Amino acid sequence: MTVFKREEIKKILVIKLRAIGDVLLSTPVLKNLRHNFKDAEIDFLTEPPSREIIEGNPYVDNLIIFDRGDKSLGRFLNLRRKNYDLVIDLFCNPRSALMTFISGARYRVGYAFRGRGYAYNIKLKPREEVHHNVEFNLDALRALGLEIIDENPYLPIDESAENFAEKFFNENDLKNKLTVALIPTGTWETKRWGLEKFAELGDIVAENFNAKILIIWGNEKEFEEAKKLLSFMTTKPIILPRTSLKQLGAILKRCSFTIANDSGPMHISAVVGTPTLGIFGPTNPHAQGPFGEKHLWVRNEEIDCLGCNLTKCPIGNKCMSELKVETVYSAFLKLVEKNKDRITSKPC
Image (cartoon, rainbow, N blue to C red; front, top):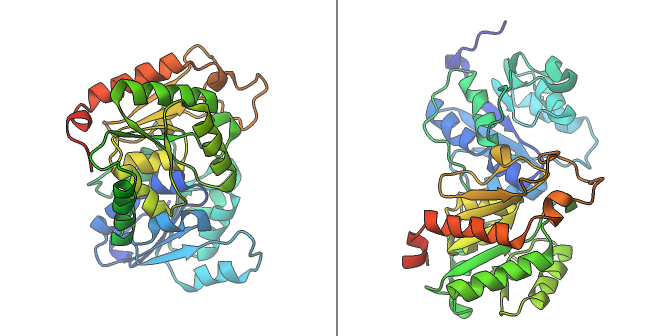
């Protein structure tokens, strides 16, 4: 059994691949590592879509971008040449496990899923009960006996992004107006609540709260869906222009509330402090919901296969298609009640 000696730690690598939301929920690990190893070099390895989530993070010394298209052995050997003392794999898939193993680090930490135990000499045991991904990530530090001082995820937003958001709000007459962001996006089709239902909900919120509605999108397909959503609404929402992730964070920070499918932008909204209502179906909000006390989530509790994690549904995606507008609006009213200050004093 490997005995962890913290005094030996001078260079650390944290690995978290894939989705924006997943990487964002791993950021508490960085602040807590810096607290425990004030003089260590801390590097972070992720994929291109999540670059902006980590860029500018004050607890990271070097950001390493992993390109899945690069099949060369050199990228793995480069990790080994860095002579890390501690590698923490928070993704634990075949690629990240191989990176961890090849690094040759004295301490290699990860969850030994599906035969990947060869890569780690400090093997993590997942909790029996469902717990949030933030806790899942921080458990890697707890297993090393490290002190946890802050569990909150963090997105660095620079002055340029803040200026962009300020200008956008001024130009669209949103300054000091109750503004509600709708995020109908989602990487899986099964995670998407219908555009018609988003439109109906948006109209209800706009009329009952005299609110401005802002539609959020990411890629070109989602932009077309945003335009379709606008056409379904009787009120006049505003479609956000193309933004960087930091600009999106600055925009959402200025919104009063957010209603979102389970997605990276949903997590960005929650992290920047905007009360966020997450709409869930195939994913488990207890593990992947918006993190923090001011947020809520809603799902169709009449369906018995919730949290299936299927990207294709054999029964017509009932968890989302049969989730009623009235149910989501009722949850939104609870979100408003929980965050009354957002009504009386506008965030921007």
